[in-house]
Length: 166
Image (spheres, rainbow, N blue to C red):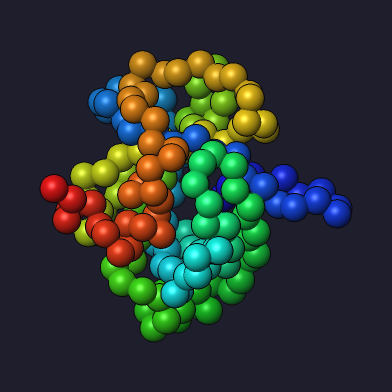
């Protein structure tokens, strides 16, 4: 689950950088893994609305539709039975299916998403930061940054799955 900056009177913010992964050497450092299934409801030009199911937890998530590493994000727990019904009956298809791997590298938590289904073959690493200026050490397996490329946003992968890219 994403870390959100929730302070009374403040806007929930996510500061996230996204990168391609160049090889599988990160696998030896994985601390835990979870399978995620998520779907999107018809979004607007201002925000996306998704439901996410992982193990026995589920969330509704609203994220601003802005490019870049800093966006507004709100996340709320919901019953898993509701999430399953929404995924099966209300969300756009294809659903996003991925395995998320968690690992630490020089004091930062990295989330590596390995996609399946219509997005099979895509592997991206995400890093959440406390500030836009926060520095971090790049792991050897880290490739090109794609934070500003909307094709790699999960909401876009529903409409233009990775398997359809030229």
